[in-house]
Structures are given as structure tokens and as C-alpha cells.
Length: 452
Image (cartoon, rainbow, N blue to C red):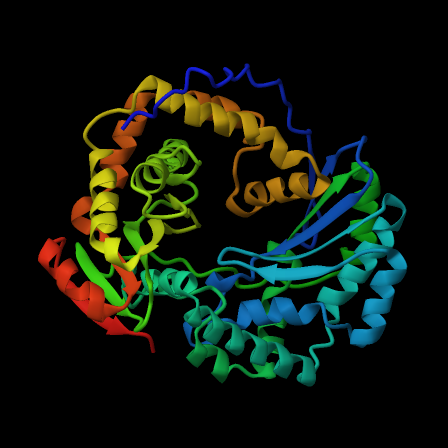
């Protein structure tokens, strides 16, 4: 479906030249890889330490231990309790964070250049000699359980969780959120966290990324001084092949009293190393990744069904999900879901018009430099290079890869990656109001479920 071009809209100019900063990389004898991205004009330094300690590294029975471990690291060290640790960061003018995803865990901070060495020293102490206090563990665990309950009270977050549960089969870890389920989090103990931290937070699978007004030799010396004798290899992440939870079907998640329906349509997507990555990126943007995308124009601008619709792929080490999403009023649930399915299906019928492709592709190319206006953005950009082993020239050639995606590439990607006979269609809403009209629509075999 081509976009309508407004003749009064100013024509976009050619993207300005941009060169991602060159970087340096050195692997220390203990396995830690040190990455330095010099940005001489920057005012601050960003330090990110990555380890292969994300949710893919945990046992399923202990789902959520990776997230709790990362959270607990910033609550003190063996030498510094929570209060003293906070005072130490305040003296340095830094804020330390620690979090995890499916594919990695990160401890990070930002500081002025003169405090970077002391910050790395504190970061090293935090990950090598964590305090892992019982009371802090109990607090964070309770917060996580409360967040799960709050998420299930929010229709959008509930739809996201239930979509994963149904789009993947029971043996695929991706069928749950990376931070765990109520059952797995409730069963976690501090000993589980201590064991996970000791076995997975090691230099053998770690990367230290430093971006800012720094020199590689200086960063390397700091890394050797504070982390050079850090020991441990770590088991790394699990490898698994995600499988679909079933063929085309419609799932209603009953939420009595809802005045809206949260809609999700999708199936398995691609892995981060897929050769289809760039065509999939542009395809996702055309369907629902920018304001002028097909889903948004149709559901929001033309039909007025929603405030916004989106779609895209979520690539991980293993194939993550592809999904399209929108929140609509209950009375238009059937029409909106039918429109979403038909629009996604029609993407397989014909290549996009060059004007539509150019508008979306030029947007992606144009906003590319904005991601690296800060040293935090630069350090963040190095993470996928380190975690997924991307080519050293990945960011140097990023724009060229986007510009090389043509209409036939989009059509080929749509035919390979969008599979209507595999669509999971999920609606979170009041089943008493939407069940009969959805059943009559004949979109696919239907089941109704309730929130646990």
C-alpha cells in the first residue's frame, strides 16, 4: 500500500555524511576484551561491562535469576554497604547501573574523564566482590513479583506477555519474559543469585567498552590494573532452536470489563545474524516502524481505530518474535484485527512502490547519526558488535546496507518472513463482548483463556 505524498511537504535533502568513530580492541590474558571508542570532542566517558549472563544463560527452573543478580550488584560491595556505595558514587559524580536482557548482562556508568579510572575501580569491585545482602535481595525479589502483578493489570503489558506465551512452544525459553515468571521468581533464593554471579560473571566471556575522550592505552592500563587478575571463564549461554506454539489460530485473553482490546499478530521471526536482517529491518519499518507506516496510516489515520500501531522483528541470538500491535476500542476489535491480518498478508503480494520504500529507508538512514550524539549511544552501539560478533566495519557500512535494500528485497523478505498460515492472533479484552463477533469472522481456530 503506497503512502500518499503531500505536495506541500518540504523535500528531504540528502543525508549528511557520517563516519562512526574508529575503535580499538584488545583481549587480555584472562579473556576480557577491552574496546575503546575515542570521541575527543565529548565531555563525558561511558563505561559498559558486558558479560554472557543474560536470561539465556540461566536454568529455566530459575528464570529471573539473571535479572535479580544484575539488580543486586548495584546495592553494595563486600567493603561498602548500600549507603557507603551510594556515597562513593556521589563523590565521583557517577551513577552506576546494572541490568540484563536475554543475550547479555551489563554493568555501566558515566563520568567525567578525570573520574573514569576510579569509576572502573568501583565497577570492578562491584562485580568481583559483590555484597549480595539478604535484605536487599528480599526487597528486589518482592519488587519483581509486584511488577509482574502490575504488568498483568496493564492491558498492553499483559498482551505482550501472553503473546510470547502462545507464539512459542512450551520448550522455548522465549515464551516467557526474560525477568522470569511468578513461579520461578518466587522460588529463587539468595544462594541461587550467589551461585549465578560466581559462575557467570567472569572475564572469559566479558567485554569492557569505553567511549569518550579517552585513549586506548590509558583504558587498557586501567583495565589491566583493576580487572587484569579477574579470573573465571563462565559456562556462557544456552543454545536452543525456538519452535512455534502452533499454526494459525486466534487466542482471546479474557479481561472482563475492558473498554479496549489489545491486539497482537505475529509468529517466529529471525535471529540477529540472519542474512535477512536489513531487509527485515526495512520491512518492519514499512509495516509499522515509523509514523507513516502502513499499519499506522490505515488503523489510525484512515479508520481512526487507534492512537498508534506498530510492527517489527525482535532478533536475538536465536530467532525472536515478529509482532504487530495496536490497542483499539472494543466495538472495532474484529474490524481492526481483520485489517491487521489483511495488511500483513498483502505485503507478500507486491513489492512496495519506490516512493514508499525511499521515504522509509531515507528516514532510517537520516536518523542513523542521531543514535551516536552521546558517548552513551556510541558505547551502546558497540554492544551488538561484541555480543553477536558482528563485523568490525558493521557501523561503517550500516547506511550502505540500508540503501542497498530495494523493492524486490522487501517483497522477497515479506514472502519468506511473513507467514499468514502461522499467524497467532491475540486479543486481550472482554470476552463476553468480543468472542462471538471474532468467532463469526472466521479468522482461524479460536480459544479463550484467562489470566493466571
